[in-house]
Image (cartoon, rainbow, N blue to C red; front, side):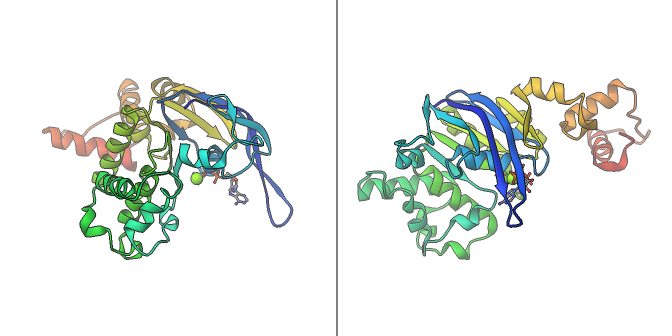
Length: 285
Ligand SMILES: Nc1ncnc2c1ncn2[C@@H]1O[C@H](COP(=O)(O)OP(=O)(O)OP(=O)(O)O)[C@@H](O)[C@H]1O
Ligand SMILES: [Mg+2]
């Protein structure tokens, strides 16, 4: 499923009557099977863009095409859109509402045409994919789960439909390193089986290591787009390092001869902790 965005703009109308231009004339194309990261400072329009991509808001102006068909045109099948795009928001726990985990994950399969048995198999697959023991968790209340578990149930509910496009808003914020690695491994696998992945993140390492392409938003404008490595290389020259990976910062400090270590650095572990200190504020960066 290829996605084409043309001159997309979106403005919020605040209760005071004031207009907030959250997206300004944004255009880009995402090819089938891509893994796209969206980065940009807080308030730059990332979540708004994802809501538009999922068909949850109407553009103020501009168009969105899936495989050449405009999704907001009269006659475009909304049910098909829901089957095509799966979206997990910043606080996915609010997406949970059923009395049991199994019912919650099964909810999205109602219009899928699957038989009862197929639906149960699919729910089992989705929950097991997200690391749950199906028999243990199926009758639990979603409300009784931890934050990280709720998030995994919400993701299971979305992947159960096997959408061609999976959209995640800040999926790894608040996950521990193990959960983060698990999640990124999981989306990489989905991507390798052909699912188009779009995710926002403030984690430069995750974006650099896992995405194929990047879109960079600033104040509602798309200020850069392209292959991940190229975008990071260009970003290096901007923002005083705010959007660099740690590896980039170390490379720059070394190149500029600014990385001075104490003579107490002897082992590889010493070196790593000295680098860590340099990167987390102790340094002159
Ligand atoms: N429901 C809303 N009503 C009015 N203005 C809004 C609403 N949601 C977002 N905005 C405004 O639109 C702009 C873009 O917000 P958006 O949530 O898309 O940013 P973001 O890039 O996702 O930020 P973050 O990194 O903090 O999640 C901001 O100026 C924000 O204040
Ligand atoms: Mg956001």
